[in-house]
Length: 550
Image (cartoon, rainbow, N blue to C red; front, side):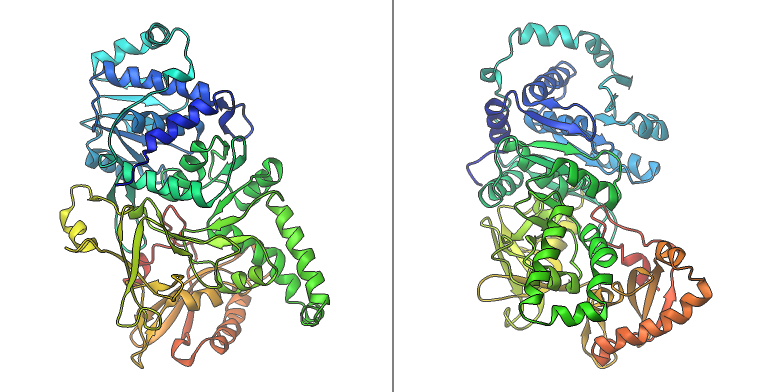
């Protein structure tokens, strides 16, 4: 266990940044750190008066918002276990997860609760609105009685609230803080048990390696119910006294870019989707033109062009960031090579919900092309192969960041963490002599070619996805042949007046282009149109298992 505590970080930040604005929904006035302290303490009174104890579970279902963050902070600083559940799940699945978690209290958006109802969640004694913190419904007399008196009880307990009153809980790092349900790309939902130590280790590493200062603005648009967004767009900047602006609704890349231009954040966390869309839609058409290819190949001139492109790209993201940290999935290699060539300030990290999430990171100026950073200081990471530098094997790890296990699922826990404490990530890669991790693919998505060679479909998909009229793809195996499932870019087709009949002809040519760029054993036999967007996990990875069953 590390000596730093998450609750200590939160207490310190609130005390030191008392009057600074902390959390706000995009386009709305926000809460200061003092106002957040008041709301946390009111919720603590609510928990105490209604018999909620340390270790009890509190479920949280709603879109990203400042109130969502306040409930999260109130639960973990009280010593309760927060159960953040993505609002994207279907109502029946939401109820199943709430029931599985054994939560006794639910905080939910009004609209989400309307689709749920209370009857299917037997252990829930009350539901509180995330919209305005009103009591929606309750079977507990204590809850109904305490709500009208909360303001009065708070005033009596804290007649003149000051920084000296900010002392929440002495709960130790070994105690459970979060049960995080994740669908994953290779299976169904499991409840990841994350303790205070894991969260504190993530925050400590971020504080030591991603420099920010009080008042720095950030934009939060990743799902807060997922550990990546929660740890690095919320918990870490909150412990630094930053002002976090939250994009409440599921934002499009256009809205995200607009927010970046207005708020000009100091640090940007992103998934590849946003970066790749900018590369494919704005940059690739320009740098692929014949005359531009010639200019970019001429020494001196290419340096001037690279500088101009870098400046324009930097301004797109607000122009004031230290770096952009990309995680959640692999970045398209062609985009990565170009961004690296022009000196764009970006880096790629690696993590999993089971590590809360961070596994590896390196700053933009020290990261290597194709790498996903170096292991964090609280983890030992290696490759399960005779020659980890040259021979691909499974990435395994152990240390402070590793989860306690899967809630009420010992079998899945034993499959993930072996008797020596090594967690088996299911990811395949190599690690160089300097500790840089190079991820090659998922062990469960790896295909065996007819020649006996291992094929990583992600490598082929990266080439496919850069082609015109293709939004995304999944490469699967049928017998001894590779098939590319293609979700067309209907927006681009409409713009260029391309019919579905014309698309098939274009895709036949595209397949030949792709096969020219990959080894023969990775050649795709056929493209098959998939008319709907592929189902995704919260971090926007394709749920590959839904399509490889074929």
